[in-house]
Length: 343
Length: 144
Image 1 (cartoon, helix red, strand yellow):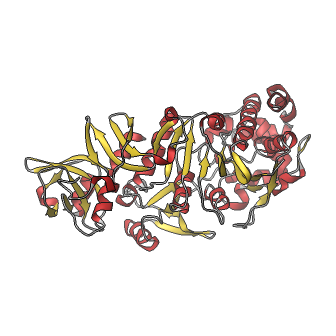
Image 2 (tube, chains in turn orange, red):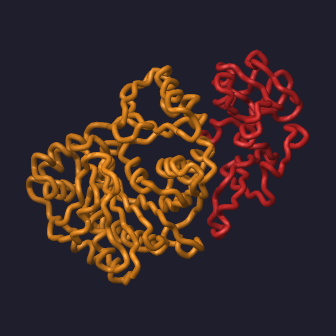
Image 3 (spheres, one colour):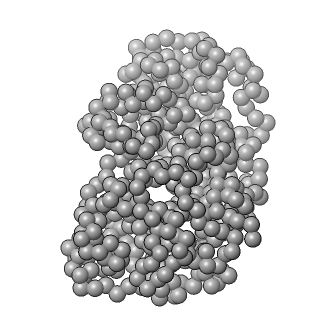
């Protein structure tokens, strides 16, 4: 099965797009690889592609998430206001705020309150969404398979509030150091940190989980507004290689999910190749999984797409959700809730 | 813990602590929740109980805060806002920054922020100052 799933040449053939002259023109103007622009033109049409590209030129302001395990919301909020920060509510989560204005000093990562663990600084609000959806009406252990640097891990640990342990894993050691530093800073005592290739978790962990989150390594094209180098980082052949890894990763982690458990597969990417394509492959080759709708609707998100370029995806991917920068004023993000069914 | 903080160690520690080192800083922890993970993969887990700095162990901030929940701040110094600012950037505590001190003071002491009574690190008496052993900012400075 893995051989069928993971042939790089097949993936490359299936996802390959030939850029149009329109794509070439926009790619030249905005500094992208041409195939990426062609992708957006196929997804959104010309006018919305322009809106997307313009939205990617605007840097997003970071978001602070208050550590409610440790400090009262009003106290933390008032401390930040006293420092001179201007904060805006996030409609769908009352303990996080977008920073609209900041003082000259201190920076948001240098306040006493930050060092004392009062809050975590996210680059955007969108990464909060997968955690809120995963933990809806749930208490128990969670596996965060690609955890570093720790935004989602610390959020999960905070929401679980000692009703469960977060098993936070990553492959990259220097990023795990950041993760551990956040855990200590935020005084979280329900996190276990491991250093593994996530595809090996099923061999090393002698247990399964009811909740798993996979924030898969991706092209990062959903965060171009924060890192413009992503415009020209991932060539089509690189993308095919990445997609193969994503499929292998997701397939492997589904093996550590209990029956009736929920796994969230998410990327900071709006590329269908890294999202609906990956999930469709899994649905094609496994008969023990299904996609479910989120239990709550936080915002008016977009749904997963069923067709892209020459590709027809499994209908069920329409239950996935997409955060689109020019519509939602957040980074690009896609997520799917996958449940394990009995064979 | 028994002699200085006047508490029973087994209430706060565990029989088989483990540690992981990040550059010159080693974190000591109790990892009962990780018994089904092969130890080679384990980096950190469960409860933070101390640090090893230059091969000497010091109690964790978490344990100090647990002990002080009773309202008794043994072996601690309470520090002004200016003193906290300097301390959290790795500097020592000067006498004039100390708002109050709770004996015994001839061993490592917890450093407490006067504004909210939270522990922000550990210091050791040295001549006229309290030398910074570690502070909450250290994790960000060393472990980035």
